Image (cartoon, rainbow, N blue to C red; front, top):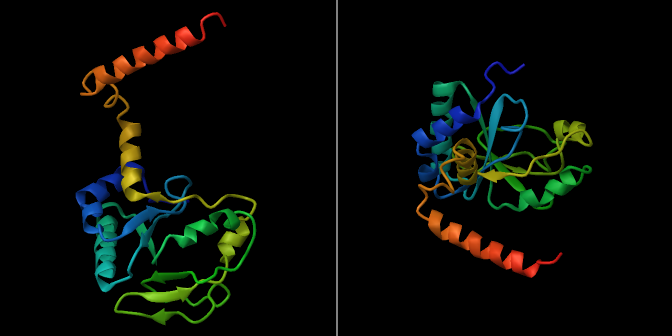
Length: 198
């Protein structure tokens, strides 16, 4: 179904090679979509902060870099705050109306049923959308699959590193090995003494 389905290792490589966290240090960036949980044809990134022309230029640069290196498609949305995430529990139950939630994208998408009014161009790159409710795709998925919670890109990179390098941590090569080993011994002595006779 998805010929060029994104793979985590290649995406992580792109993030590191392009110095993603350094270049986007003015914004919080989250993964929020099917990737990497379900089969999908793109990678959804959520940028939290000012939808400036600088951000637009960086998104285009990164999107092109990833496309050229992997053929993966990067989708983007920008919100000024993380308030939209507070609606996730409701998104998994029923339709509803957003209140004062604006998203910003670099293309004009005319969908009156989803947005309160026509999108407004705010600068060279971004259009502002006043969110109204769930789109048709989300409504179709109600009761069938949940909207995932977002994860910060920095945390995603760390999590991937932990999972793929399980023996890097808590080994004799770790400088804190002896300290934690001593703590564990002291803890076990307390436990054995406290529960002796049970």
